Amino acid sequence: MSNSKVLPVLAPETATPCCPPLTERPLTAEEAERTAKMFKALGDPVRLRLFSLVASHEGGEACVCDISDVGVSQPTVSHHLKKLREAGLLTSERRGTWVYYRVEPSVLAAMGQTLGRYSA
Amino acid sequence: MSNSKVLPVLAPETATPCCPPLTERPLTAEEAERTAKMFKALGDPVRLRLFSLVASHEGGEACVCDISDVGVSQPTVSHHLKKLREAGLLTSERRGTWVYYRVEPSVLAAMGQTLGRYSA
Image (cartoon, rainbow over all chains, first blue to last red; front, side, top):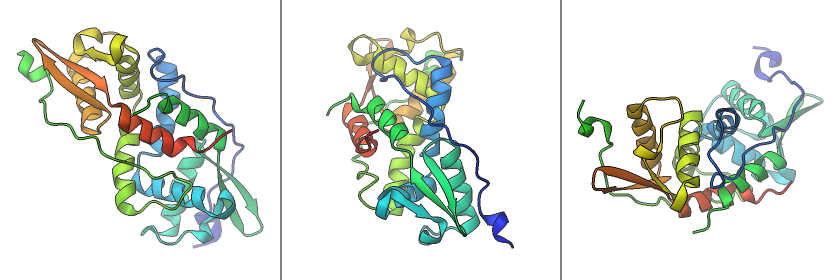
């Protein structure tokens, strides 16, 4: 299998603005649609592990070549990274042979704010 | 159809501790499994709307009787509320005829903290 089948296709990224605080008022259908996508992207154990691998990797970025211990094949890793990218949680950049993934801090900050108004 | 088919079965609640900050280190498989469940529960547009309805309702609680404008039937509402309860995001209590749902602040605060370390 060639690398072109393994590496995800790159597309322009837009950081989706999201999520009024959930205590403020009921979400509209459109807001819920947009926000749910991001939560759904983190709602899979393998994707969540991959995401934490990228987020905690040196410099806040990682390439597929850095990821080998989540118990799934490299095409599966690439598939999940693509899903995270499509949900706006990761951005990607090709440098030479590899595609590097970074966390998208603004989107995560917005998601955190949505939930974070609650204090224990 | 009797009310007993519409109202979800009540069970004891435990607030699941969750989620080291995602930048700190890669999640273990077990941590990811537990944390992904909560994200997944919010990863559906109807559930997210219901959740925001409860969270933004007066006093931070609502009963099924307060929820009528999300475009799905009452049994579907009850089904989704049960899912949110099973994920530890809502707690429920029966008072008289109705079951009342509240947000579980500690779990949401933990989820928010997990994401919130990122700043834009």
